[in-house]
Amino acid sequence: MLITRGDFIDVWTKLNQRGKGFIISKLNPSKINRTKSAFNESAISSANWWIVPFIRQRWNKLITGDHDIEYEDYFIKKFFSHSNYLSLLSIGSGVSSHEIKIAKHPQFQKVVCTDLVQSLLDKAATKAADIGLKNIQFICGDINKTIPLEEEFDIVFFHASLHHFYDIESFIRDTVLPRLKPNGYIIINEYVGVNRLQFPRHQITAINEALATIPKPLRKRYKSNSFKSRFYGSGLIRMILADPSECVDAEQILPVLHKYCHIIEEKPYGGNLLMNVLKDIAHHFIDEKPKNKKILEHLFELEDEYLNNHQSDFLFGVYQKK
Image (cartoon, rainbow, N blue to C red):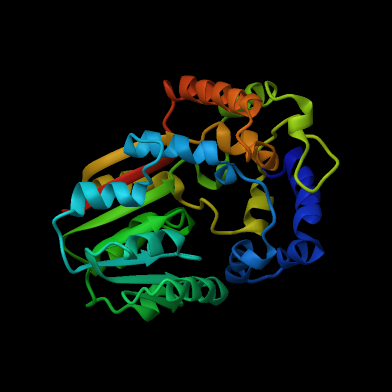
């Protein structure tokens, strides 16, 4: 749909959460600048599902098999425990928290983080310096202009960034694969659902059924006096204005990776219901009160039931270049 009622609600909510300047930034005629504004951490003030510890424990369990083992430690131990002098390129690393975790492992000689937003990389560089990491570097700019094709890596890594690239097939074929060593790996932790978050009607229905199970006091929106009673989905116009790159070609991520790479491992971890049910109300569930935990456990059950018949929107995957 071009416009939904949820678009107006979301604009009002963002005005309360991030201020007038953030809304005005979305009127910038430059696609790149509108995309950058979405990732300007100084402007971010929201309540999304990833801030909930119990949610992150669920991800760990579904990906690694253990609530307390994070996926970075998992894939390094499983696939690279006997490797040395590894090089990793992260494209769209942002504040590079996942890359810093990876760089702590002795197997990695070089971790290169790239992003379009200098302020995020500066924050990452400060953190890396504070803990004494010498094997990680941060480069701002378009990868095609900053990383030469002849520089090859053992791993190209994406955490919640691959779904922001236009024309996934040409990007993987012409930009990513040439920078991989023979038999090199692509590792992703990504949204792989429908383009521009244009969810099908049955998914929106399931989201609203799950939302209705949450008591009203816990549906009060972050930094707002309004309550979340219904999810309407996002209109295409607002999606393009807010961030032109958001999920622009996400549906092609798995087909393209399957075409050019061998599947080593894929671990779906849902998000089809939870991401949108908890958007703007996740702050109520940060503490692990028994009552809140029980509500979340019921939401997990609803999502698992939905996933029995539908592809997961989020997935961790390891692929090897053919």
